[in-house]
Image (cartoon, rainbow, N blue to C red; front, side, top):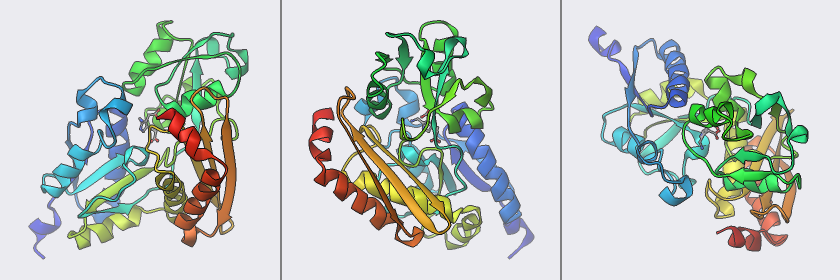
Length: 308
Ligand SMILES: NCc1[nH]cc(CCC(=O)O)c1CC(=O)O
């Protein structure tokens, strides 16, 4: 091809939040190195960014559809999503060309006075709008009060700084990408608070028809992360639960073995069902489906129903 074609920039679509721009910039940098082409960031405003309503009310994919429309409409060539925000159904005409290496998947506490969970007083007000986090925090039996909040990570942290809340629970990955990991007062052990399926992972999406670019983007893929995320998302999809359900799932790949932990909790934290499944990374999705079946056999259905 001609020199001008080689230099044509790859248009990488991103949401406009500080977190989205931070993670998209990292992907852009890696893609520049892998492709030898310039990569430009294109900001796309999504319904989720435009509305202040609770995410559960807005429905799945509120942070995603505008980016996907821009991709299908050829306004951008690549879209970067927080994987956990993607609906579990695949998108027609699009392919997840790369799942880069995952950041820290854990939830973290950021509390006033630098304290951890154990030092929070009974009745402490903890900001989180995610049913999965509320349910697991309630399950601790520490008398914490969950206060629904949403908004950008910096908006959430400001509520602790201002004294409006005693603490917030957010994803470590978000703080890490914003360079604010030093503000964490406790990393929550996945045995206590299981992260959301795909938390800390990114999905880099291309058009199926764009075979050459898809192959280039593939260089950013981290197979162990992809396998872990596939297992976690198959668990979620088989439970027919969305990203707003009180479901946690976290998989690791070590020495060729994929281990997946899953939990379903009632919103009040009074009942939870936990299971562990293992298999090979090549069978990631069936590990997820099997674990979901085990959870359902143990009664997860009625727990999920009561949370709807
Ligand atoms: N639901 C919002 C959201 N989507 C992705 C992240 C950042 C962490 C990640 O990439 O998983 C966050 C913020 C949070 O949960 O604290």
